[in-house]
Length: 131
Image (spheres, rainbow, N blue to C red):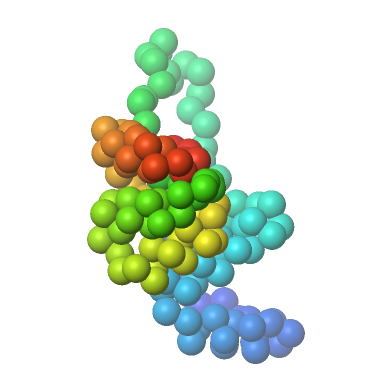
């Protein structure tokens, strides 16, 4: 990759300056908000393997999952307790996740852990999706 710094156009300097002041967590939230608002993905495109390279092998099974809370359902307090148990977050942070659903609860977890988390949340009435 090219390590040289690109010149920022004048019309974007203020925006870039404000983004530089953000911490990593805020930048991640900003990226997600922009992705959702504009219906795009900020992830780099993945090169497709040629059909000859696969050699008839089955596609690799996904090993890393994201647990996303779609809705808290009727039992918000029970869902907050479950989110706190799963994530180790405080009461306010767990409540914020519930109130901002759909929201990611946990990222980069194994399939077994993701399914366990999903079961715990669904047991208290939440709607959950694994990605």
